[in-house]
Image 1 (cartoon, chains in turn cyan, green):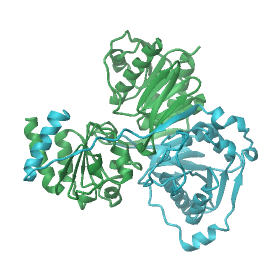
Image 2 (tube, one colour):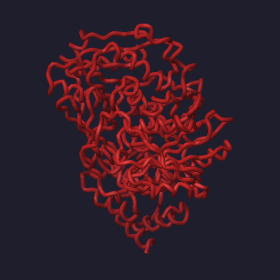
Image 3 (cartoon, chains in turn yellow, brown):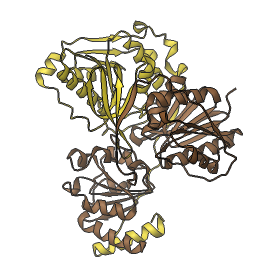
Image 4 (cartoon, one colour):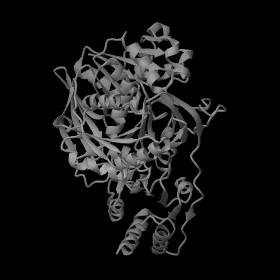
Length: 263
Length: 322
């Protein structure tokens, strides 16, 4: 089975984000970059499918800057077989729809029966790219999956919804996105890290995948970030004083009713 | 020429999601701003009887796609049907709720329409005819102001943020024929808990437990949530310890929530957790460590052992509710 994982490199969730001087991007210096946490589940699930099915290949596909090679290498060290990075100066300020077009174009050159991606990237929180890739490739999608099973050319996916899950069966080729709980991603082993250095990892430009640079970038974007700001700071809170815990509880209940008017 | 606002109002088991009322109310506001009509869309099986309700929230026209094939949500059928409706009605603006279904549908629909989508937005405004959205990014650490170019302009609205406003309009009902198109997916099983359970993203009250819970016994937190009529949440450490299911996790790698009241019990306040709950209207923190970062975000803090404080709070709230 040919499996492709769509992977994005994002700032560590513990990182403090600083807004850049242009007010539309973040400062990228001093940031620790990691594999998008939901994409780690996607890599792990791809490897488990490969191990269960045998005779399979896992390809990591990323659109990003050269630093994303580190994220791809990490996925290769976990056990993925090949990596493809689409890096091109024209990609700057491309919106999610444009990124999906780029990934879909790259997928024309990569055989695939199954595409797996994280349910969202924890930087722009758009939830958009996997669905749009599935649309452009012309295959079904199931999002936020916590369990899957492949049988007779079909994949059955347990998808999380409000208050529970729904099991959806889709014909392959298909795309599904991973939700926390699907697995525990493995750590790259030392031999894995050594092997990863020799695995194929190709960087391609937009021209290489047949995309005209006018189709992407800010000029082609349907969504344009005009400004980034920080949410308003919350006013300093009040530590409730009292002789006993009961006194504090009485005061809290009073504040919630009389000041906050929420109960 | 594109005209008007179209709202796809999500329902389940013959009831609109709370979020659907928020979305239709916002749709009315935007329709008034551009001086054009608001159309509500209801899709499902045996939904004709509830569809008229959208008139109370400002729908000038209501399109009802009532078909057994729409009983369960699947991406491909709902995208096919929604795409046809958007094409036939040619709206300037399309609004959905950012529920599990709304996120999935809006993303696929936007791709098929080659249209701009602002996902999970918390505020919308118009500049001339351009829709400008505020949407939290980096799990809420930053707010992005995003403009959508071209029409239709699609927005999926975060639950629990926008106001529900009654505004009676004609709400002329029109039953539409639907074409489900080719489908490669089907629902084979539903494991949805009783609909009485409040989802975290739509809850008005959330009581969350963290590492300070010390184990999987969340009974005090559950009781407080029950007394308030709210939902139970958890920090990443509590979920990673296996004390709570992943679906309870609040934070940048879990759910981003905006209740009226968020009570954090035994949660220190890691940056990724704060990102997920900092836009709650009121925050209460209970932690025995006075230095815990959570107190910097809390409106009200109690420095106590949560196992002593929470039962007292439950008793006081019960008294108030009597």
